[in-house]
Image (tube, rainbow, N blue to C red):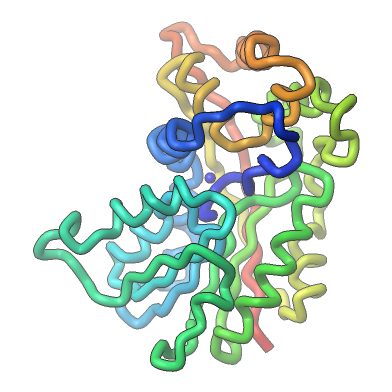
Length: 285
């Protein structure tokens, strides 16, 4: 919800944007990251992740998906190159002292690319995950292809590689909120506009990376928040609204996102947005 909902796009927002990256990482780990827990659980259950699993998590962010795999007994390596503040939180989550008597060996976090995770003493991975969904911004799969090219040589033959994408917009309530970011940012960054997920997005990424598609699934991942303020913090923590903030200002973005959230606010003040995400299992040749 990296594993993360989307890879941060801070490099596109120009030098004028001022962001407390530490606070944003905390908002991500405390609010937004948990939205994809049903997806992680479905994938791990289908692939029978357990004590024999050697997992390489690409874009691991603040490490919630890794934590869930570790609780199943998996040995794991998480790689994160773009969000060091999130990675610092992952180190806290996965530190041996945080596990007490449940601490397990085989936990490693790498600040860098998959190539930096290569180690002659580490056996080949038998599962690779890329839980950051694509199909939200035009061109958002480009970086994923590079990650896969660097990661697949570290995996054993036939190992599953999991890719994730947004479902169709008619089944993703959050799509209407994400359009706010596109509309406000268009004068600054037209190339990064929102677009609906396409049916074969994941298959195309897999094929370009030389992977063989071998099954897929859909998982309901509603975005639920305690209130509008929580929803605003969670959504802004993704980095998707940074270009909009640069093109306008923080107050304008907060106002328009709050208005876009109004249809999803329930009588008790909570915010509830149903979404569906799709995952693809592809195999290393």
